[in-house]
Length: 111
View 1: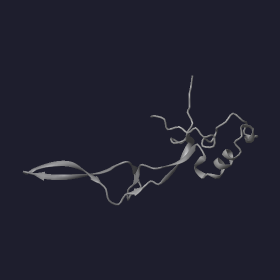
View 2 (view 1 turned 120 degrees about the vertical axis):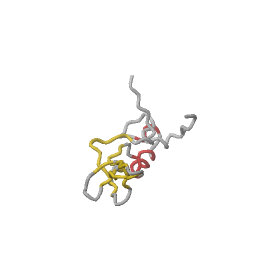
View 3 (view 1 turned 90 degrees about the horizontal axis):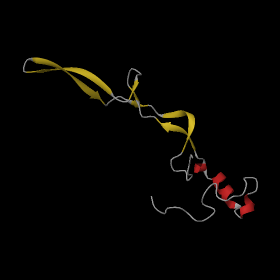
């Protein structure tokens, strides 16, 4: 993690020491306008892609298995076979509380 920071004042969403009411105070009138007009400027994430699947019966899980009986040399043995067909992805999930986006350029520090 080297020197990937920006030294220009208009790049960071919350740059400058001026108040939100008067962005012209630090000579940076366009930085707040640019952040508000850019749709990805919010630091919060409200939804995520689900990692689970629905099967044909409507059950929800990460993986589904089916028990099969295999006969080998006259001996019966039960095996689990992973089901990969006829599964529907869970889709988009709304988060209970918003999280901070991983790419948002703000450092959080607790002392």
